[in-house]
Image (cartoon, rainbow, N blue to C red; front, side, top):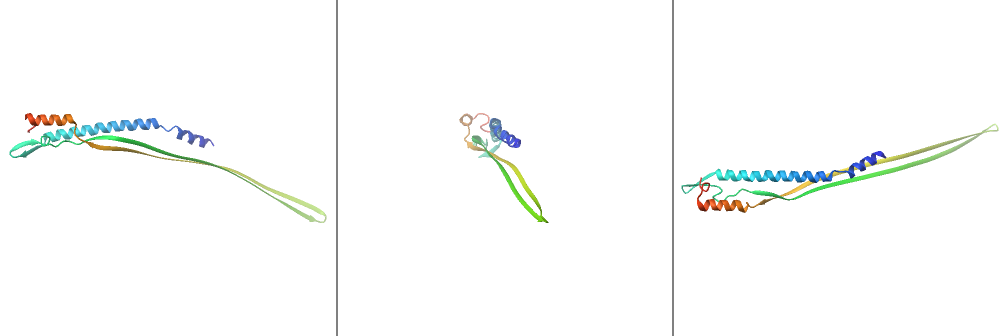
Length: 159
């Protein structure tokens, strides 16, 4: 029975707050990495020359923009299944044998008693984590800077 109590305690004390916290931190780190990647792609686009009609442009001035991504949803799902069974079996059988021999009676009795008590505990668990990632348009501020560079002919508009 102490095993049952131990399994029950471990199921009840599952670290759900820590799981949610770790998911939040992981998403924040992943978002930061995605943002850094988008910035790196923007720099690469600014440094990539394309020659058109005798003039050289970079990809940003031609209207290309890096992709930006954002997490819109994250789900933690945990499922626990716990079952306990207890069975008790008792059986009694008895027999009496009597034998008469030369006026002497002999009696024998046999009793067979058995008792069994069985415990069975099973616990199963599964979990899943899902995150939804969507592509976003380039930030308005970046588009505004690109338009201004292009309109004013400042360095960076034409490489």
